[in-house]
Length: 178
Image 1: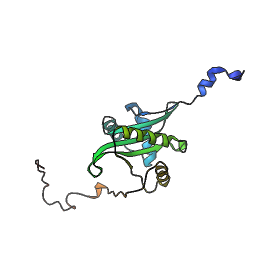
Image 2: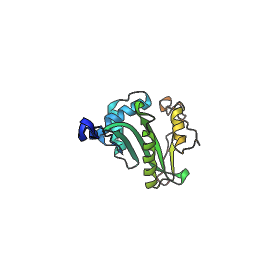
Image 3: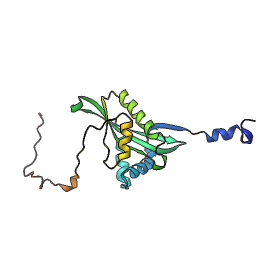
Image 4: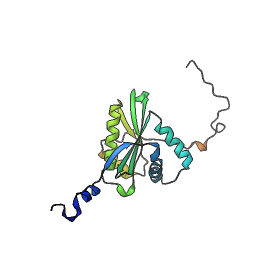
């Protein structure tokens, strides 16, 4: 017979089931693992969980998880917000990571397509991403996926500063009528 001695049941066991879905609180362990891989460090788990829960409960954020055979292999975190300089709603890819052993399998492209589709449904005018200079493979990936290099991003660590060394010698005043 065509199936040989294995039978029909074995064919179904080998079937690969992949999907992209929104992350849920129970995904915290795989999300933590992937973000730790992305940043090449481990964060304090209790603080990470608190932030993760806040993100999941925010209407401005969406975390997409790619699964194959019920195993998380990649994620994309998207933030939506109105921005004055775009005069409209924008979507920003905050994090995109594919488990290293599963890169170049089309998972990143699937996640980015899901994010683009979601952003369009949310009436976003533009989709942005910031990527560390050292991630040259990621830069090529974004360019292959119709994104253009248009900006520079400048950052500083706030631990370097205090109100004293920034020259704030008087209290800041906030006016409620502004």
